[in-house]
Every structure is written in C-alpha cells, then in structure tokens.
Length: 376
Ligand code: Q9C
Ligand code: ZN
Image (cartoon, rainbow, N blue to C red; front, side, top):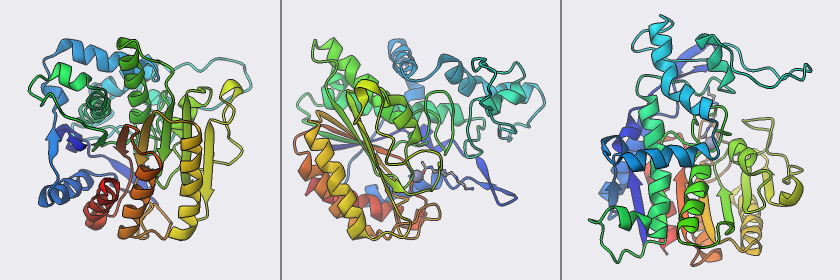
C-alpha cells in the first residue's frame, strides 16, 4: 500500500531569488504543492495530513532535532531558526523581507578551520552556497515541517508511526510513502543551504531508519539505496554519504548543470565507501530512451547492492518544458520510470521525497502519472 503525507505548514515558505538582475518570486513556490494537492484530491488518492507545529509531543520535537543533528551541524540548524529574527532586529530587513547572502565562504590556503563570522549579515553567506535559498518569516516552520514528513514517512514504513499515533489503523501494510516535502532537500549538505534546500530530507530519512533499526535490535547498518531522479545533481546527499559504505547514492542528472561543481562520473565515494556513489550525468536535451538507459543502469546498481530501504529523491524538473531542466521527458514517461523502479526493487520499502519540478500547470498530472506507474 502507498501512503501520501502532507503538512500544511509546507505552504508557508515563500521567498525570492535573482533572475538576471531582477528579484523575482522563487520558482520553488507554494503553488507547486497546491497544484499537486489539487490533482491528488481530484483523483482517488488519499492524502494524510500531519502538522508538526501543532505537535505537543515534546519527545517528538526533541527526536526530530536530534535525528537531524546526526547529519547537520548544530550551528547551521540554529542559524536557520534565528537568522530572520536577527536580521529583523538589526534593521537589515523589514517584516516582509528575505534573508539573502551577499558574500559566500571562501576556501583559503591559511589552514584555518571554517568558522562562522560574528556579524549576522555576513553569516547568511557562511551558511549558504547560492542565492536560491532565501529565508523569510515562516521559512523555518516550513523547513521543519518538510523534514518531519521524511521522518513520519520512515515511521510509517517501520511501524513506529503506529506505535505513536494509536488512531492509525493497526494493520496498515504501508510499503511506500510519498512525502510531499517542501522545501526540498537534496542540495543541502548539512552545513549550508542552497538550490531551494535547507535540510536534507533524504539524509534525515536514513538517520530515522537507522534509529528505528537500533530500537528494534535490527541491523543498524542495513543497506540504504538512494535514487536521485531530480534534474539536478544532489550534491548535498552525495556529500553527506560520500564516506558511508552503507548508503548507495545513485543520481541521474543534467551534465554541467546546476550545482555545476559536482555530479561527475569520477566521484565514486571515499575509502571503504569507494563505489557507493554513482553519478550518471546526461546531456541536456536527452530523450526518454537515453534517460531510460541510465535508469536501467541505476536500478541494476541498486539491486546489486542489495538495497534494503529505498529513498527516491523525486524531481519533476526533468520535464521537457521545465524552466530549470533540459530533458525530453513527458507526462506519460513518469509512469514508466516509476514502474521500472518499483519492479526492479519489488518488496523493498520505499520513501519517495518530493524535490524539484517547476511547471506548475503540469506538475499535478506528472505526479499522478508517476504514482500510477508505481502502483501498477
Ligand atoms: N534564478 C531543485 O530542483 N538555481 N533545485 C535557480 C534561478 C537553483 C534547483 C536559478 C536551482 C535549484 C531542488
Ligand atoms: Zn532540481
């Protein structure tokens, strides 16, 4: 059975970005999620709503933060929570304003360790790598709500969700959860935001999965496979698991596209994790046939690895008319992509996390097409 998870607070984050020399509403907008919800509700899909901010369960809140801290630096998380208020008090922005960095952290030859600057204005650039990760008044609430969906999704797959929420039917045999995360996560590397991402939801899912295994005296090092099929390379996810042999990260993405400095084939993982990072860059303009070849290879890798838990970083910016993408992929193709993936990894519990996808008009249908293929 497939369950879909949504948190209304994910709609609250609404920031701006630079296009050319103009400040515009960020393409990663609440309208994306609204379009998906509308399509799901008009179809037979049941969407389960959770609202993290209304949770009074102190233990749960502590748990989410502690799981996030396993892959994200404490000072970075604190920055996400406080920077808007600090900028407001310092008179750097108005109430409707957005925190946007001026100057990014520079690697130097001094041998000095990275250290956050004292000045709150300067700190914005220390904790980001681009200008597509603005922060406004409600951002933190949405960021945490989005992250929590990844956590809840894992809990549903492991049965921990049932233990906490007694109202949930005891016999739910959920083997796939689609978490409607917004903001997305795969560009965040645990110490800085970028590419519309603030917390790496996929990394949090892995931590949650391991914590559940530990609690159940099961194998904490159970093998996790991450299939990243957003148009962009998931530099953040790659970075977080680059030395971890128990996570296989496989990504199909536009060659030489954003985030530009990562995603090459020769990035294969470090030390004992050599071979557990697989980048499959594909030329801009590639067809679904060319895409499918890469996908088949990616799935073979995930099967050979003996993936026990699958995380799919799912972006719809591979769509032919996406303003940030560049593949020739159409609505019906998502059905075959999903079907192939599910068939290759039959029986493996799967958490699907929403990443990018910016053609609002077609986003709903693209999601429905993917779900149709997954369930077939
Ligand atoms: N002025 C994801 O798809 N650059 N992120 C946008 C527009 C950032 C994409 C530039 C693209 C980030 C999750
Ligand atoms: Zn993307």
